[in-house]
Length: 423
Ligand code: AMP
Image (cartoon, rainbow, N blue to C red; front, side, top):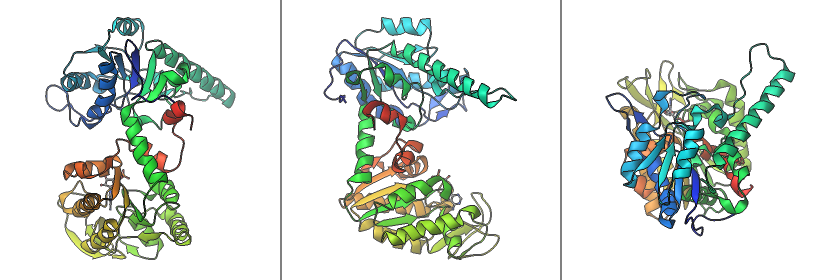
């Protein structure tokens, strides 16, 4: 596998799959990029190609237009923002493929950049088969095969635009889409590579998956146990401590016989939660659950709030945050760790009166990093929390991938990564 650092792009065209799926503010007047973290993260790769004297064709999706052109998902605001960040003109192709786009790609000169319109306007990108009503299984198989053929053809057409394929879109690496994985089949090994962002992501995640210093603590939070069960299972083979917070903690507490009132709880996952705790015990992993809980009456900002023991939440109340005793316990473990991995908030941090647990844990992770621990934070909400409390600079690595990070940590092979390095 070639590395982008050692490759010389002089005189070559690179098609670079980026993840510009950023929040857009369309409320007043002109649509604007609300958070440009993902765009900024791709700049080192773009600048490397341009600096060598190569040219760049950028490809990204935005939202889920479902294979149809829809102005709501146009990359035009991203285009304007990118020009400002790069400080140079960027050509904008109004479609994602076709004669006009090919002509624009052909006309690109060294050190020039172009951006294609939202690649998910083309149904071939995702390659989802569409079955008419009443379709039998034989017909479905035919449609599936046809969809695969169309996706391959689409990928081949895009590959015809450029000499090199660079994948820098970690956020979509878990998707087997035309521009995240299929296109790689149309390039020999020496002509396809990861971008700089992708390399940084893989380095950080491989470190916490396989080369972590101990003691190693994973903090898993967020809404549902079912979303992160496989990640927790996989982490039990690696970590010394597993801290469970957020909405999912109440399923564990109920499984252990606690009363969780009207808190978020997946009753069909009680046995699974117990078997996870059993696995932890057999692996000598210490699992820490909240001991106290800040509860609210209703799911709204200004709801009445009170703190109780996490195992004794009265009916009519819902646990929305971890309490101060839980923070103290979790903090102590985090500060004694050499590796910390965090995914998922400790509570409904979007509401100020239930944000304290998440803020305090974010601070503890930042402090542990200051003391020399290696820390990785990932998942949309925990990253948003770290950003909101201005702690990003203190964390060793903040991942740009939510779903992709979780799947990687589950131990799954991601199509976007496999397509380039073969594992
Ligand atoms: P996830 O995407 O699984 O990381 O979940 C993030 C979401 O979980 C956030 O929107 C939080 O508001 C929500 N969340 C965290 N803790 C709780 C809780 N105790 N009750 C309800 N929702 C929660």
